[in-house]
Amino acid sequence: MRASIVFAVVAVLVVSSPRATGAQDRGAQRPAAPAGAYAPARTSDGQPDIQGVWNPIGTFYNIQDLEFQARYQNFRDDPSRRGKSLIIDPPDGKIPYQPWALAKSNEVLQHHADPTPQYLDPNARCFMQGVPRHLNNREFEIFQPPGYVVVFNMAHHTYRSIPLNGGPHIPDRIKLWMGDSRGRWEGNSLVVDVTNNNDQPWLDVVGSFHSDAMRVTERFVPINADTIEYTAVITDPKVYTRPWTLKLTFTRNKDYGSELYEEACLEGNEQTLELMLTRPRQ
Amino acid sequence: MRLRLIGIVVSVVAITAFARPVSGQALPRTADGKPDLSGIWQAVNTANWNILAHTAEKDIPAGLGVVEGDEIPYQPWAAAKQKENFTNRATADPESKCFLPGVPRIMYMPYPFQIFQTPAHIAMTFEYVHAVRRIFMNSPHPEGEVEWYMGDSRGHWEGDTLVVDVVDFTDQTWLDRSGNFHSASLHVIERYTPVSANHVNYEVTIEDPKVFTRPWKMSMPLYRRLDKGMRILENECYAFGFEHTWLKPPQ
Image 1 (tube, each protein chain N blue to C red):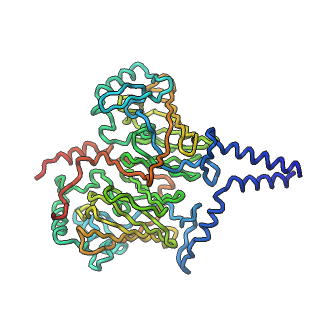
Image 2: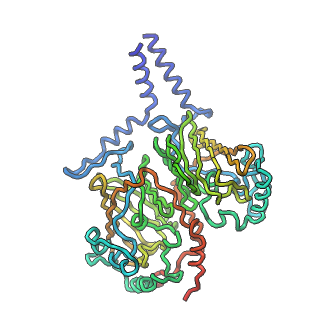
Image 3: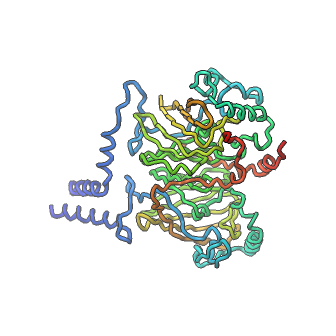
């Protein structure tokens, strides 16, 4: 009798698991990690598992000059952890602006500490932070349901979904605050191509900017269980003279457990925002 | 041997019957055997204008309403408050300020949303103001005083029905554009029952002893968006009109 029950259970499992074959196929296609490299565990659909809550090491104040913030705030920077700029290419750590764009960016830099609305960081208005800045703010969570990588930001209740199905980008006519992301795993590295960005988010507080022609190629490389190295290659022929590369390091945040909180931004700042936005232009 | 075969046949028939919804089309299921709700969904009704039955007005489509019995059991003071809200709705409706719309209103606003499903956690991401719902499965609500626009959602499965218990709300959200409202004591119980691969019956029980005389219910279908290449776009309501325009490249 026991044997028959076992047999029946096995039969039922086979009948009710039409995906078993597919899972094995995916497993067979998994690329082997290079010897010595960190190999994360796998999710149920075979993705390298980088789920959890993460924090960037860095500052979104001035991505070209990490000591800049100390001039305006009681900010204890630690250049030994970050270097002097988040930009690793070009080697001088500066955004390769076209001359007109450098002039625009400098204009914001000069006014950023006492901004009228046109010099106000869109992030301060609770607008979406865009790519890559939403990864360079505070804690964010990576969630990997089957076929996707989803990033949740606590600040501004932002999210960004990255489909892994190889589908095409949306029509170029559509421009989005958070862009259109398409991802794929290359070994244990997540590579994401981001298009359809609008020209609204800034890359930092002091007006580092891009146009709606920006395209970002990101690489998330887990180097151990608690660290992800992230690079974003940013191209924008309307604003820059050449592609440039931003580098961030994400460390695992163990304070929040598995649940982030709701952080309504606009809702809590209505009066402050009204004051900011109705302030007369100089 | 005969007994064994009967056992197999009975088991398989039972599973097959369990897996087939009324329409005869098999429900998609996850690896752990639950109905797979993953995908992009949207309500197709006029509840965001008015959850009760209503005739058409300029720019407002008519609707049969989604409230069971077409009656909301307000306490007398609350019925008066709803009328006041209705009068002031153009500016008093939290939607007019682009605030997070709360639950259940976000579920029947005229924008799509996506469900991501794992055994321990179901996430819903909405096109409207990038709203997010996180439904943690088989776990308790947090302790302490919590007031969130979207509430705190905890889910479990009852057969093929996803049941979600939502508490910890603010009193800052409404149920529609017609001034129907609740207090921070709102308790929402949602039941998502798949009827076919492409539609789910969504039933909501509303409890709020500070505002209503008894619990009451809404129900409506949620439909899978089958549009080619369908994906969630953006509706950053609060940014409209405040976009900066001065960083344009020279023409």
